[in-house]
Amino acid sequence: MPIKWDSRLSVNNHTIDMEHKLLLTLLNTLEIILRNPHEKESLRFFIDQLMESAQEHFDHEEHLQIKYLFPFYEENKEGHEALTVELKGIRNELYKYIDDANTSQEEADNMSKKINHVLRDWLIDHIMKSDMKMKGFMNDAR
Ligand SMILES: [Fe+2]
Figure (cartoon, rainbow, N blue to C red):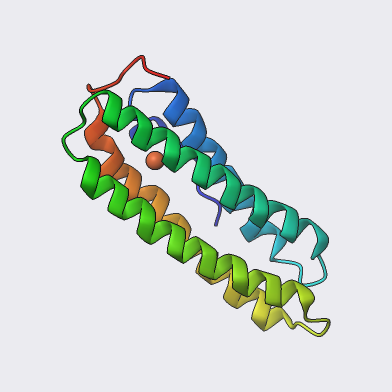
């Protein structure tokens, strides 16, 4: 089930909110593409785009956190590192899936479940619990 961004996920910073929306959209897109086990070309594009956008977003957030003396910087950075490990694992599995000529619907469903897990664990949990603490620290910052 795709997750729709809503104002409860806002950290009151327009640029960070936009980056979160992009990551959410990319994860939703991957999940939707995986409904069809024959659709593989676009999978590579979207997983690469997700990795790149996530890395840029984490770097950007950490840069702002240092600049605005955010007191939970270390905790947030650890969350980013754990998510990067998880995303790289998913990317590697997706690459294998893409290169395997005989993938089944079941394998597509399994990949979809893993992506769904990242969606919920990360975008909801990390944003709601960790990123939300940035509210008030850097409201107009880019
Ligand atoms: Fe974030």
